[in-house]
Length: 469
Image 1: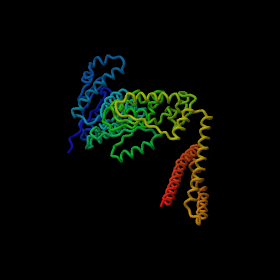
Image 2: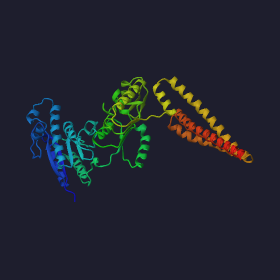
Image 3: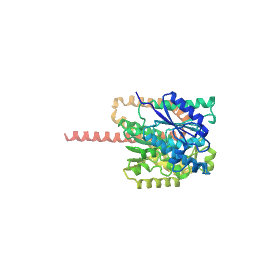
Image 4: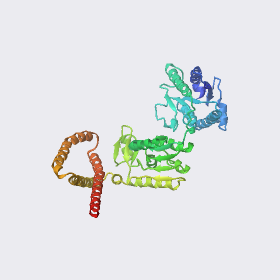
């Protein structure tokens, strides 16, 4: 039988005392013992607590009176958060708590989440907050904090707050019933992989291949918070390797996009000497808010409306050059093996060229016409190679029937192709479909030409062998 779990409740008992005691009651009814910490500043605490506000202030290197004398509430809150964090960490190191729950408005949520973010991933953390229906990035950060919206104000107990507070307490109690520790540092080092929607197909293929080689893969969505979480995990945990497939957050940091992961993005693995592969994925766009905001922030650009809240903006040639220099700086400071991977295929060259000349319709149209011309040449080469192979391989007595069948199949496939492409053109752009079709034809043409040359070489060798014998 597992020993009983203990939870730390962090609350400002002068304003949230009854609510904190109600959470304690709910947890104790589930067999969870409680350590109640009062981190309030003003007012009075009427309940008996495990850790008083005076002790919290003392652990911050000050006194409660000094904290109460601070005129700026933000500075006073920072001092109490520091003290609460040190006390909570001490309890954790001593094995006296197995989970944390907090509650409050903007100030109480800031305090409780500030403590929770210092705990490892897997350690149960629940925050009941009036701020949970807003942008929660400032509270959650890069940790697995469960935030529960209080719906109404947490100023007192009523029919709404009782059920919400109880649900939060039950959620924590359920987490504490798990039999394993939930701490990930005991596991084998994983491979970390960054991605965003446009590199998802590649990322999933990489993940599958790595898992077949018995590597655990952890993928991070490069939306600002994801990149920060990956950097923190590299710093705090052992990692086998890092494949940074999406460097988009570096671009957003440099040029003011919304998915900014800070100035240290991309540094952790290289500074720790972790084997790293860098891929310049998703550097061709910046992420902003709604379309009108994007137009004001980045005027005269190429825009793509992802949804009502997100618009992506094409990066300029000069911006891509700056990103390249930043990546080069990161690699110069690497303490371990690092590689930069980029495609040298024709599609990659044309894609970068189109990015450089974004907005220049004449240049893009010229590139498009060149591609169409090359595709047409490939079709001709493929047709000639195929018919030549038929003439060489098929016996003359069957040639007429074979060519008739091939011609019939080719003609019959035209209506089928029109039906398939009709559906595809409802989904994809016309020029994109032509580009993709042409790119498929290029390798097929090359393969057919190689096979034809090999067959010709074999026939010449056989003829030479017969002449010798």
